[in-house]
Length: 131
Image (cartoon, rainbow, N blue to C red; front, side, top):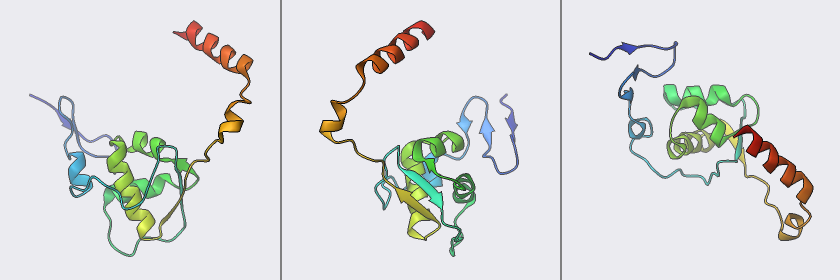
């Protein structure tokens, strides 16, 4: 017999064997494509405006995480949902004006050649020691 338990107020229900009881596609109402373009490194932040339409507990949870700039990847990790579902929720909040999004800065090809090789090798060596 599996045990269902509530972690904290506002958190989803979990089953120890099955995981989240509300499946991700139900959270996004079956949608798999956000209405806005997001990268995993896109930074989002609350605008201070509350959504007029009643969103849902997952939208409220996401909005609560966005007091300061936070990346899409971080939000997905906090709410324990796939990135594509997180992007749909974020797009809903951007569409209603509750969030603002900023795409990550792209690096020009000339800047990539100026990368400090010694620094990269030191990072690689450090990672090898840890693993």
